[in-house]
Image 1 (cartoon, one colour):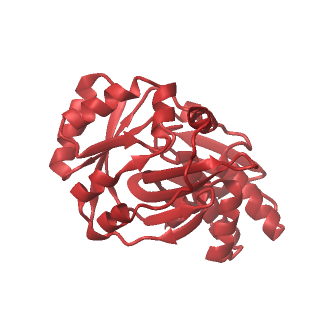
Image 2 (image 1 turned 90 degrees about the vertical axis):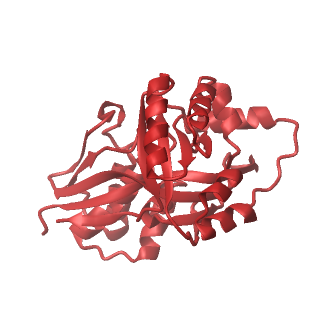
Length: 301
């Protein structure tokens, strides 16, 4: 058996998050346009006498190390499907902000799944891996796939999208997290008594992605969860203002927040906006990244 397998897996930004009304099962139908970005976690799977999870890196203390962790759940799901014991030590080297709306937990689930598949030699097909991912959470399939995609249903049904160039981003990381269920609950509260339309991908946004045109994309960015995130965390408005005042083409809350994402013209603009955000005192740190980025990838054994 291989001594260990390490998989690198990216964060994501939602350049469009259209949210439909609550379904009877409590979920919401989405039109979720994902871009993978060049901030990565690494998940290393090593043979062990049982299932164990450890974590290092920024905010590692906030990461659960029990079976609520999506990496552990991924290992258990793969082991159950193939009838193998889940004897693995999963070490997560965190670099994606924790509880920041950038799918860090989902990334770890996808990374662990790919690493365990390689470690155990289960030989799961891409379709089987994506099916397991969908059972783990709405964002996990995209963490495996990477690139750019339209997610429908809960976000787990993916249609790859064409991207015509590289987009530059700055991510402002807030203190503390925001609960995704709480943000959706606030969305429902704010939408009560209104007619919430069925979610649909924006043709203008898809055209901007295909063209690789940052200015066009900036005009099409939208997140239906942003009002709910701002309602729960009003201080994010100051972060959004600081980024756009510093020259970002556009800013929005990333997913359910509280990380805010700023689309910028180029690498130089990214450095300028990141510096201004840090100086503004409205965020804990600012990270520069590009998109699209590859999905979960084995990088060493």
